[in-house]
Structures are given as structure tokens and as C-alpha cells.
Amino acid sequence: MTQNCLTLPGYFQQMKVEIELRGLSPQTLQHYLSHLRLLEKYFDKPAYQVSPDELKEYLHHRIKSGVSYSNVNISCNAFKLFFNKVLQYNWSDDVIIRPKRPKKLPCVLSKDEILSIIDQVHNLKHKVILLTTYSSGLRISETLNLRVSDIDSNRMLIRVNQGKGHKDRLTILSLENLKMLRAYWKLYKPTDLLFPGQVPGKPLAARNIQYVFQMAKLRAGISKPATVHTLRHSFATHLLEANADLRTIQTLLGHSDISTTSNYIHLSTKHIASVKSPLDGCDSDA
Image (cartoon, rainbow, N blue to C red; front, side, top):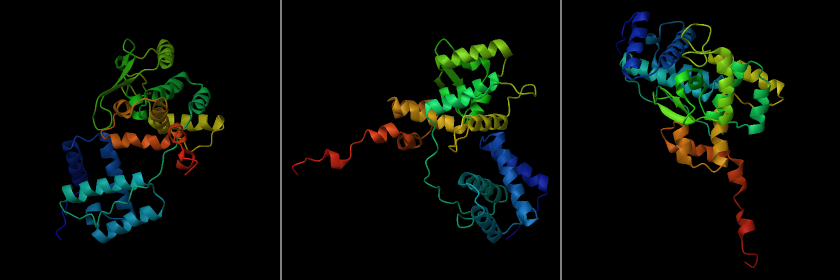
């Protein structure tokens, strides 16, 4: 097999071109390049010199080390693009082996648990960010990239620009959240980005909000393995329990496939508890 003798900046630059051609985000580029650097660090040589057997060894090492499915899955995406499109090695799925997705239900918090966590957040900006994320079912990246003009108080909607998959969508604006947003605006007076960070023109860093959430969860005495993304899962589950239909929830969340949305049926204790056992439903004379 002929190796493509690209310099390190060269093949990383080609990776960037391939990602931009596919319309993927700059964050995806950074994730993919970080996985290539980890591969190079593991073998102490350039990624283009890694053999098929070595790549399988590395993926096996990652899985046995307890790395999450999503992390290994990103590795596989990065390697497929790099080895098969940039280097054109055309390695099969028997080389870049993607692990089976585990059937694990995500954590969900009750409304009372969410409010108790938010009550433990004393910074108004951080409090409003978490409340907006939950009440509108947003990803944290979507919340942090909101602009003042995205809040439509007349129609009680929030516009999400270029969410996951580069899709625009509308989602609901809670009346209680609108009150908090107005109090926040009066104090901070944002003019463009709704939640700007310290760097001009850049939003607040997501890792800061993750830390705030974890500290607040600890103070609230909640031991569930919840993260900021749990707020989005909880939003969908609570809507389902309030009898919202799946198609509406799919639209609000921005899911491409309704099968993704239907997973929330498994998280709804109300839906499960409402089903009668066949034993209780049987004719007693049978």
C-alpha cells in the first residue's frame, strides 16, 4: 500500500477542506483533529503511518479503557474521513470498526428537581441560561449562541439559528422564562449575543455552564447523573407527559427522524404507569 507522504500541516489542512466541503461545523473539525492527535500520541508517529492492524488495536484500547460510545463513535467518524477520503486508503468497516450503540436510557429530572438546581444558582446570567435551556428544550450550544433578536416575545417563540445539522427552527418561549430574560436584559443590557462571554463577539463557554450546573446539583442534594443536556431530555419527557404529540416535540427539538423523538416514550413514567397489566385486564371468569 502506497502511503501519502503529506506533511503534518498538509494532511490536517486537507482534513479541514473535506469537513468544509461537507458543511460540517468548526467544532466538528476541532473534535476530529483532536482524535487524530490522540492516535498519533498513542503510536508516537504521524497518523498517516498507522497501519490497519494498529488502528484496530487503538480502537480496542479505547473501548477497553472505558471511553464512552459517543467518544469512540466520533473517533470512527474522524478516521473514516481521514483514512478513506483524505488519504484514500479505502479501509473497510472491518478496519474502522464502530462499536454497537448501547441501549441505555438517558437520565431525566423532574420539574421540581430542575427548579431546585436552578434555585442554587445565584448568578442571574447563569440562572437564565439554565432556565432557557430547559424551558425551550435547547442544546447548551444553541442557548449560548442565541441573539437578542432571536427572542420573539410577541409570538412567544425563540428562533434557533443553525442548530445541529445547520438547521434553523422555532421553539417555545415560556412566560416565566420571558420574565427572567427581561430582568436579565435590564441588568446586563446585551446588544447582540444574548449571553456574551469575556471575549468580544464570542458567547460564554459551555464548560463554565456545565461546572455551574454540577455545583448547583451538588448543593441541591441531587445525586442523579444529570448534566446540562439532561434539561433537554427532561423538557421533551415533560411535554410528552403533558400530552403533547410526538410530531410537535420532534419539531421543537429539531430532530430529523421521529424515531429519535419516540425514545422519550421510554422515559415517561406517566405513559408507562398508565398502561394496565394484562393480568388486571383479564376477564376474571376466564
